[in-house]
Length: 184
DNA sequence: GTGCAGATCCCCT
DNA sequence: GGGGATCTGCACG
Image (cartoon, rainbow, N blue to C red; front, side, top):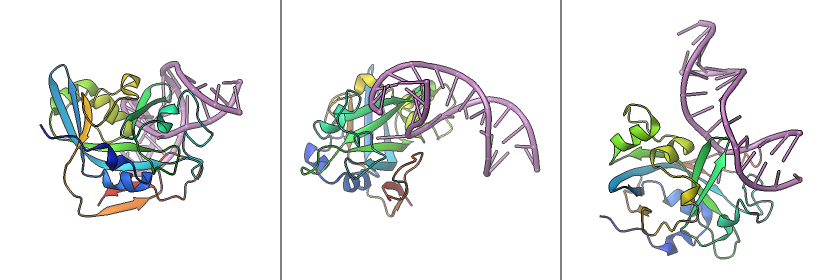
């Protein structure tokens, strides 16, 4: 079993962490089954300088995890039916920040993921923020979970050859900030 | 392939 | 009471 990435990795600028998470592994253990996948696309959400961020309006019951310890999970519920998975990451000089995991390529446990999704294994089991959480069985139960170990953690993967930065998807504010990162 | 409607509910104003 | 860091299925072509 690969070891988890240490907490210090997440104690940096949120956008830098978002970029560096590309190619890393997400590892999930459920009922003795191991699932894993490589991170293909991420987005950074910051604090006062980012109107698109949940943290922009200040700390609330929903977003308080974004203000908590780095290297933990921020999971939120949206559109009445979907969960999205973020990794809390921020520079020590800032109060809040998180990286949304948008797309993951399955490595191990694809059969379980397909079952979780209620579809066949097409190879595209986790290519969206809410698809990813469904495939990896991540719900608000995992909100606040430590990602440096345990049943859900992030481990080393490979170094992407090329990274493209662009505008974030699905937002209406701060649409010009190039805080979406993907492999190329 | 593109485009749009509908599902569905928690949080914040 | 409004809106959302989304996904799916269906229509069209």
